[in-house]
Image (cartoon, rainbow, N blue to C red; front, side, top):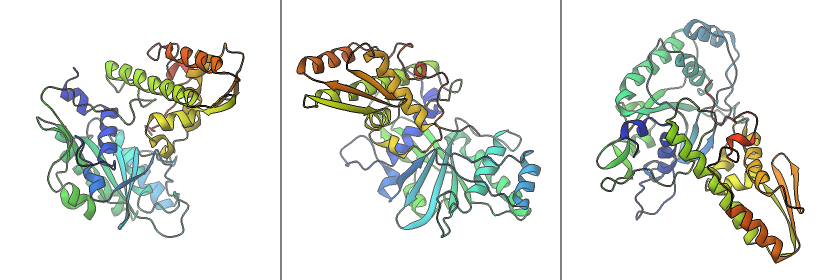
Length: 354
């Protein structure tokens, strides 16, 4: 079983902790959605945030981070609250970083981009943002100091900067929890949610604390994730894609023509979360999911690949319907020849490493 230390710094585990904290779930489950309980809801993942182009901002970023790069930021999550105008802009890190780290360039761009998100959301009214970094609990306090120093440096040069805070992610005997070492740095609803360390996933004895992941695999993080966890993620997500395709085919009333898209399968495989992925490579990822099934079904005479992310099945009889299901049942999601990564020439990236 994967150790707690490896798991708590795993980017996929961290992302799923936040997603479970935002789920609308009954009290009877082992998951406690602490952020949703206080009103927060997931707005998007990988949203494109524009970096201001005014001279003071460009100059400040050059002085602080050694770069004038103004390419858009793509934070892991954006979270909204119906009674609070402040959007939480959340970035997850396996570990904290100091002011000498190359991550400062990323953080600086994110802080200036989040001061007013209205341009990124194509809105006319101001939309204030609050940058929150999530990392392992042992690094959260030090990272909060780094972000605060960066914020003050930007302000001293006349640049408008979003406030910052950190959330610590940890695992103990009770389970996986979220906490903060600087409660007053968070917006009011988040302060209520995290006024005490909040257990999101409850642990039962020595059982594996990982629940059914909302997102079992994130492409583009090779080298930053434990190989065993990454392999598990490949297997889980590709298996779900195949199962969802089986459900679509099995529920069809023949004769019929089914038009199946990778986006539809990924949406079902991630409990609707894929619908909120706004990363630039979303289409490539959907095409990869379609490619998994193309490998399995392309020998059928009534299979047609309509586009990179769409294929059709013209089923004229129950025998053809049964044939498709049988082929899908025999698919091997863990096989590198059929997994999502192998379905495209270049692995798609859902989350930008700036």
